[in-house]
Structures are given as structure tokens and as C-alpha cells.
Image (tube, rainbow, N blue to C red; front, top):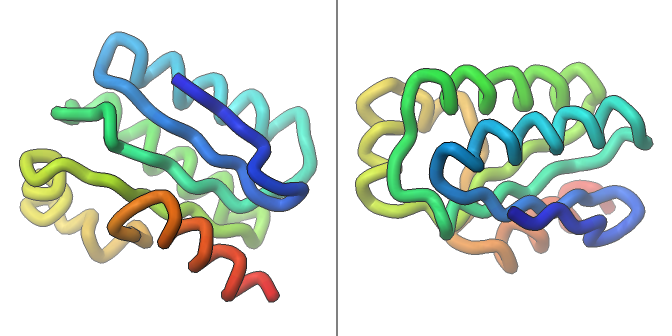
Length: 112
């Protein structure tokens, strides 16, 4: 996992499959609680599946960012994982981008 302060207002996160997925999101939540309010870009390039616990943690992260009036963008999602977002209706809950570059550009354009 990689958590990087891409800028003063954007946190870039690269997730991996479980068991690291849960630990990664816990680390992100800890960093958000300890630091300034930032937008979060989450890359799913290393994730090939999700379980209900993972989804619950993503929803908690979404709630935290929205409560802080910030954005959460998920990107680089594998086809099988994307299918899960579609089946569960979460494709209407989260913001998505094709890749990290587009997600970062989207955050910067909306913030400016």
C-alpha cells in the first residue's frame, strides 16, 4: 500500500487485496483523523476482489470525506470489481475515474 500526500489538499492511496485492504483503509482513516481535511483519490489497480467488510470500510471513508466537505474518487477499477459496484448500486454512490491521472485532474479542476 502507498499513501502519498500528492498536494496539500489531496491524498493519493494505492490499495491492495485483502488482508492488506482493510489495513490500508484503516491507515487512511487514521491519517484523515490526524491531519488536515483533504480530498482522497483511491487507486484500485492492485485490487481484484471486494468483500462486504471492504465495502463497509469504503462507505465509512466516503462518509468521513463528505462530512469534511471533501471528495473521494475511486479509480483504476478492475472489471470484476466494477461489476460488484454495479450489482450493489454503489456505482451511483461513489465518484469514479478511469485512472489516477484523471482522478487527480478531476479533484484539481473541481477544487479550483
